[in-house]
Length: 72
Image (cartoon, rainbow, N blue to C red; front, side, top):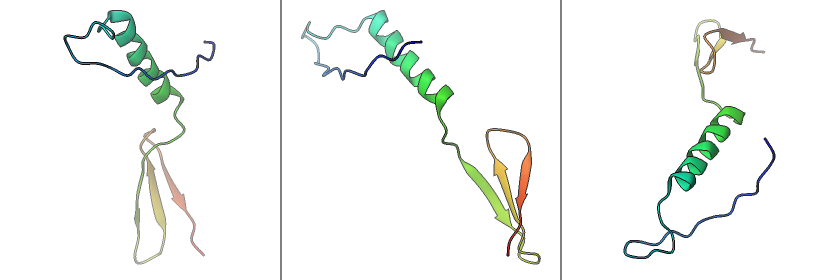
């Protein structure tokens, strides 16, 4: 998909006809949200520290696997 720069719409309330709500515009918004989510490199990292060993267990919320980090 080719890059299309974002052009912000300044929406106007009814009864203005300058910015009608149309399926094409709503689908463009939905497509942008979907593309952002699909291409996002950001995700939530949840973890815990074992107070006895100092081991840190990270739970990557984008997978079902866990990773344990070594501490110094």
